[in-house]
Length: 387
Image 1: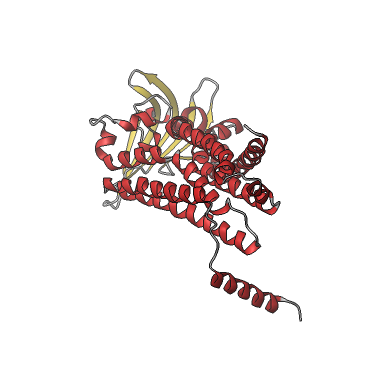
Image 2: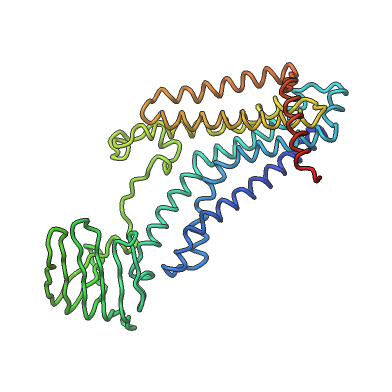
């Protein structure tokens, strides 16, 4: 790699890493704030909070990496244009393909990163997020049921409360409000409660209490006294259960030929097909975005208006390509042939972009548009100028 290649690669890749880390951190913090109840309401530690929310980082990087690459390539090309370095390279006889080579290397590195994230790391993170999240949020016995607190679970459909927990594990003053059934509400009150585990699961054995059941169609509740009552807590103890992962939580090789007898595949065949093609096309987006950015911004610019127009055109081209990919994936859920539009738009982008780069085409704004924008800016400046 020549010195000019190393210079361009270092500049663009450094900008890519900076933008990627910044955007990922901002979006991750925004999402993490939504899960702050893990510490405030459910008594979890900071490490659990960071670990649980950090499982989303591979998915965030997968989505943000192509966008960060466009910003980095645009920044580098604008810098080379502003410093007249592209003009010098062109005057020295360097072809557009020669200048494009280090940008293509950066795009290939990002494409490889996206491929690894798409095929393994992103679904792995989502799997861990579901498994760990279910364990943390459902472990009522060890962390949620705390003396003196009314603790909601299952989105507030159930509420647990105990007055006291003795050193031997015996719970005193147990209260359970169960509203999971839409047409019935049950309230349990017991003097004592004790956790019992056996081969059938985990149970909260209530002693000397009552259960009040009130059906929606009935005016008066039904109250039943009991000496002992076993309340099933198996689903709240973090015990291992068979989990059926959704399309986004499957590895790429699992989407190639999913088990036709899988209940999830039977219920959502279109989702699996659309997700597979979206993952398959993901590594090509960084390459396509780089081709668009260089085709529009990679030639020498003489005016600020021209650079501004080219920057806007590059952003619009990238946005149209990515939005068409999202739309095609959505439509492919019900119309499998819609995925062909993803590959068609990608092929068209590569074809037009490579043609423009090979010919060294300078994409300039029409003179009428430049004059109109210049006139508008001047009129606005005069109106905003102090009298």
